[in-house]
Length: 426
Image (tube, rainbow, N blue to C red; front, side, top):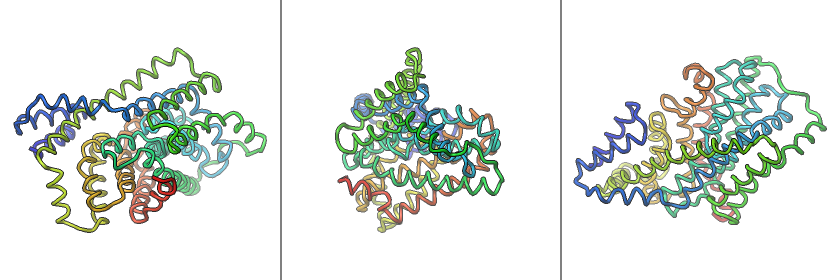
């Protein structure tokens, strides 16, 4: 039954069908081949989405929409431009810092890609050309699921169970997120110097810095309040997401004054659509997970891998190679929902640190959002910039290669990932 489920899911996905349709089709195949009582599945599907932790996803999505419509993205861009606008690749560097700032609020790569591409692609294209500009926006947007808060980490922690803490995963992403941001800024500087791109931005002055800091300190405080509250235990990740929504409303209405009451229905609708899609995926995937568990696939897979190797590092490398291939063809949410219940227990059986393995799993699939042919961030940016994926990938590959280089660094030196969470008791 398991072979029928997975093969039907892969075939339908590769045909370009929507993900929820592919999962639903896999469930029907399982029912037809396995003789499972159909009445059990609706209950399990409902139970899978009736979970308090999952409320964080629509709330963080809503906070991101409010941030975009409230002008917080533009304010972050202006602040970044004051500090690094005159260095090599200045406007591109500003885009990367703006992406990191938005990642610290929204937690979603797609929302960040849409906002950054809409606001910056046209300006960037005047200086760097549309291909390089689109690549910079895609790389900056992909920081969203790595720098906390991260919707991907919430989904992973939920699918992995009690052995992984959402707050612990958030903290695990702090140092890697900083290293990834700084590394990509160095790449931008090198590429800009080699290609002779002109300097942009204004000359740095103390007066301008103080002015922008005074205008933007409330926005910069937002991730500190939200992430800090989750880490110290003042509230859960779900409650922190609600705090982010309230904070974004207050800043949008009273600080930037760009958010209007008339904008709220559109923000709520977009968050609801995203939530419905994720909820449907989790519901169908829970049914598939139940069916393959009944068929003893996780146990058989665990035995097969343990027979193949007893070395935890080799297991990590095998998982990384598999996720690299998976990330090229499957949307990341599907991979979390389908694969975490299979591989997380095996990682525990190998004695791997659940936080370390969880972060590597998320980081690998996040990089998959930048690898063709199925990279959701690529599709969003290409659609807004009106270019082909090939035009953008010619400029994007150094950032993707650097990301995979960091993945292996984090794999071979776990303290870069686990040091901060362990220091804070996770």
